[in-house]
Image (tube, rainbow, N blue to C red):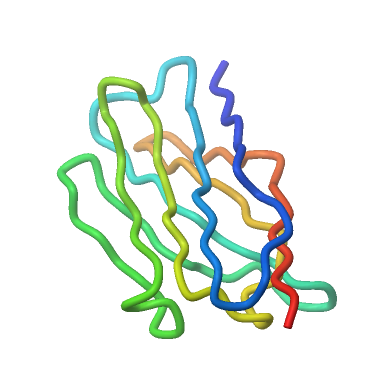
Length: 115
């Protein structure tokens, strides 16, 4: 049974920073991709950033230069460092684990950026 537990969301002023964490437990395999997605009210869930088990990263254009995704394979944990936050970054942020046999989602953590 794979579980993803997210933490680190909250309320921050524009220009501030937050760091999200997502810890995976269970059989997640040695080859996988972990990532962050976000969903604002009334919108679809969109990609923010992903990182493979080999360390390759991918970002949506709107967060490039502001957000950094990283992972600690020994802890099966992925992080999202978010700097220079903007009100349009407000959303529920979800962690996703993609493995060869399927994908798993975390429960989501709210990030609210006030102007």
